[in-house]
Length: 430
Image (cartoon, rainbow, N blue to C red; front, top):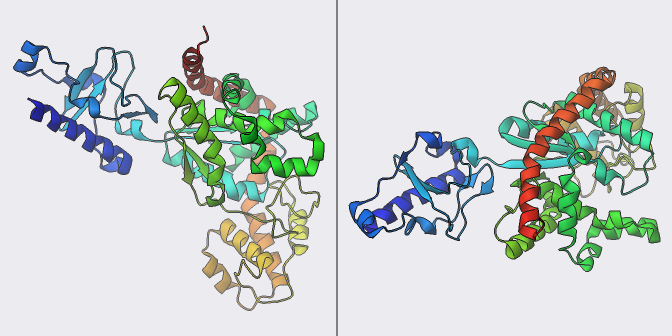
C-alpha cells in the first residue's frame, strides 16, 4: 500500500521537476475537470486512510507562478487527481486549472514616466520587454508614476509625460493584447501593500542602500522620506502580482535583494505566501553617456549632448554623435577597459543593427573614429525613424492612450485586489 502511494508521489515529483527544468518536455495535463479521481485502494476505504498521507511530501505545485501547496498539509479536505503517469493533490478551496502554461513565469517590470525614453532605455529595457511579451503568457509592465514624485514634479508636465511614455512604449512594440500595460497609481493596492511592507523593514536597511546614499550625496539634506522608502514601493510592485521573475541586466541582480528579503520576512511571519522573485537575466545593453563613457546614459544628465532620445531629429542625433567623446586613436576597436568611448560607439552600433560586435569592428576597418561616429548616428536614425513616426501619430490620439491605460489598469487590479485582500487578512485587518 505504502509502496503504491510512494510510486504515485514519485511520478508527481517527476512531473513537477519537468515543469521547472523543461516546460516543453513536461507531460501535457488537460483541464482538471477532465482528470479522473484517483480511486482509493480497498484497504484505504476500510481503514479510511487520508489519501494525502504519503503524497503530502510534495513540496509545492506551481499554478500561474504561485505556490499553492507548501510543506504543510492542508487542514481542509484534499483530493488527488491523476492522468497517465501524473498525479497531483489539490484543495477544493483553491480554484485550479492545470496545463503546461500554468508553469510559466509571471514577469513584472516598470519604467518611470520622466519624459520620452532615450537610447539607453530602449536598448537596455524596452527592446527586451517586447521580446518577453512574445515568449511568456503573464507579463505586466507598469508606468511607475508613483515613483516619479519622489522628486518635485509639475502636475501638467507629469500628466503629459505619462501619456508620452505610453505612446513611446506602444510605438516600440509593447502590445496590450500580449502584456498588461498599466498606470501604477490607478491600482491603489500598490500603496496599501507598500505600507504593510514598510512596517516590516528596519530604517538602517534602507539607509544603507546604494541608491539612497548616491542620491542624498547630491541632494545633501534634501532627501525626502519618499526617496528613502521608494525601494519598498518597488518591492510591493513586484510582490503584489506574485511575480516570479523580474527582467534585469547582469549588473542589476542585486536590486532584487530587498524584494526577496521582504518576501522571506513576510512568509516567515505569516506563512508561505509570496514566491521569491528571481532575476530574469536578459541581454540588456548598458548604454553609456556620449559625453562621459564612464557613466550610464541618463535623462537627467545636465549635458544635453550626452543623451539621445527616441524622438530626437536626425540633425540632433548627428550633432550628439559628432560631439561624442572617443579618443585620439583613429582605428575602430572594441576595448572597453582602455577605449571606453569608442567601445560605447561599437556597442551602440551592434545593438541597433543586430550585428555581432566582431562583425561591426570588421566592417569598420579603415574608417577613422570621426567618420565612424557618423556611421553610428545614421544607424540610430534608421532604427528610430519608424518609432518616432508612430509616437507622433499616437500622441495625436489622447483618448486612445488614456483608454489603453484604463483597460490595462483594470486588468492589473483584477490580479492585485485578491492578493492584497489576502495579505490584509493574514496581517489581521478585518
